[in-house]
Amino acid sequence: DFYENFNNDWELTSGFHAFCFDLQTGPDGSFYFAFGSPVRGGGRSFERMSRHHGSILRVSKDGSRLERYATGLRAPNGIGVSPTGQVTSGDNEGTFVPRCPIHWIEEGEFLGVVDAAADYANMKTTPTVGQRRGGRKQHLDPGEQPIPLAWLPKNVDNSNGGQVWVTSDKWGPFEGEMLHLSYGQSALYVVLKEKRGEVMQGGVVKIPVRPTSSAMRGKFNKRDGQLYIAGLKGWQSNAAREGGLDRVRYTGRPVRMPRSLKVREGGIEIGFNQVLDRELAEDPESYSISGSDLRWTHDYGTAEYEVGHRDSAGPPKGRTRFTVKSAKLLEGGKSVFVEIENLQPVH
Image 1 (cartoon, one colour):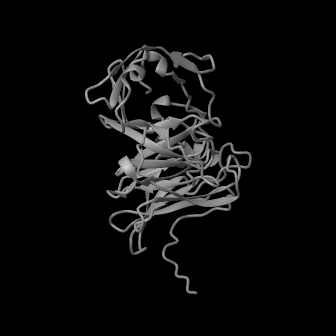
Image 2: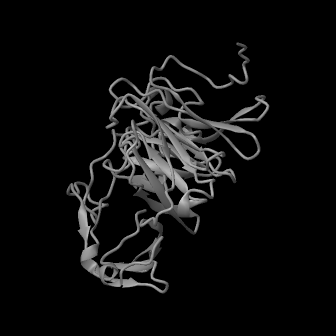
Image 3: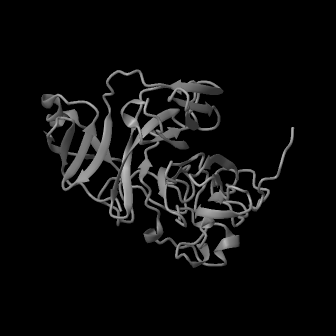
């Protein structure tokens, strides 16, 4: 065997919890991977930071140049790069990461962990590591928090895998869509996304499959056009077995799943792959909607807080249930508008 040093320009420390995650290629041949932050034993704060920790790094296709594409990550166990070059990532709950996010990333973007920010010295929010805080008193400015595509509840994803784009025309109605994998919940999701202004927002819907182990990496096979996912079992995963490699194939049968999510004045519009039953679709009892506020802080993760107390010092913990006032099937029979009482912006 022959091993060649393609690139080793990123700075390392002795941190035991600073892993390199994933390896993707962009349409121009560049390579992308994530380099985690050096999490302290026990999970809170970080050990000594290098300038490359907590970043998505890009390496030129000839290996001659390395650069930070985005910064502010904790332990992003998986990223994605679309056929057009759109970069995405998850992250793992902890310091400055209230829940697992899905990030839709622009080059140079800050993704939440102040200690790993490229511009940490000029931010109002102080890092947790003394080496980077520079003697400043701890301070938090909520205006500097990230705005991911979605924050995922723990029972949806408590520890992320990567993202993969459906590049096959043999995988049913989801060609061109993005999938999100969960290591913690051993699950596979379709990402329902909508761009509003400069913000990409959305949610996820679970594909009803159960892999042999967790779901960490996915790839579409050019030969058979189907999805292959790999995973393993470790800390904070409900995986059934130590490792697994599974194929998820389209059977040709009707796919009765949501495929789009759009926010409208006073409610949301949900699109489906099949024509809906009018009686069920227009029955408000067919829907159950709840939500919570999260807090971006120096602490490890966050509790869930009832909606509507964002500015109070001691908001009540828990989830808020929203009243569905009405539901109306839209033209074509594949979309429904759900009217929701007191629907509020997240940020």
